[in-house]
Length: 338
Ligand code: AMP
View 1 (cartoon, rainbow, N blue to C red):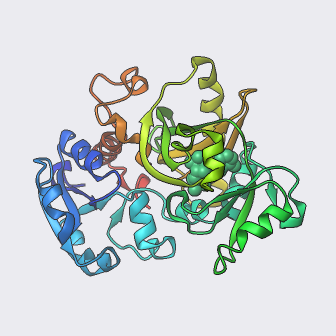
View 2 (view 1 turned 45 degrees about the horizontal axis):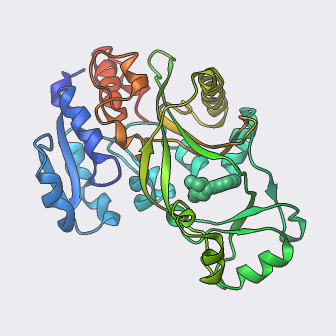
């Protein structure tokens, strides 16, 4: 095994690239940021970015892959990476890739994701197979909708059929019980080296116009026919009632355990359970993200929870680099690559 300094950490310039590359730099790695022309200057402006590799567009990632291999780079996937490269192409990646590739398929397919959550005995919102069955508010989610854009709420079959007319080209959607509660996103890190699970941080999302609709009176909302939309614009940091932590920890453990039955080495590294918590403090998990989420961005300088475990500011990006460093040192790199 070569020394850690001869490995580089690479990611696409988007999503959580800043904390991934800053974290890698802080742990002693050289860093590579894969950029498009239009965002290269921005990433170049950070000293912890050692090298920029330009691509014409994100889909031409495979054209620069050989260069990454030559540079002995370890690629860190993030949310934008998965959506640009497409989950079905992730398996084709030849450069060293942090995390289990196969698991990304389980998070990107709603049916598979649900099966995974059920195996882990996680409570999920009810799913309706057909519109005629709608007996309570449902959120209609289009497949591949970016950042919750275009979702709508329907209270009954009639309302659904009315609203769906606005989307004549959308045939692939899920009808999910709309849970009235607070959104709470739990960020975890599971080490495949030690088997330990850590709660890294929490966030709530800042979604337009769902989070802005309350700024105008209900009458005005109706008068101007405002449609609720969940387009994500940012993330807000959060701490939770301490009494909720043990249950969240157990949920994370079960999700990791179940993942081992689904694909190879299972889920490890950073992941997130996206939940709504109802007034009885019951968790409804509506999504898993099997990689670093943008909700960790408020914690580039560490979170209250990572401060309990580490003596240095530990972002999720830095935690990834630390794990890679430990794997290299122990001669167990294969345990964290997939
Ligand atoms: P998603 O694209 O599944 O991440 O959902 C986008 C946003 O819609 C979430 O961040 C929540 O604010 C909201 N949302 C999604 N599913 C539900 C649900 N079952 N009940 C209530 N709100 C939801």
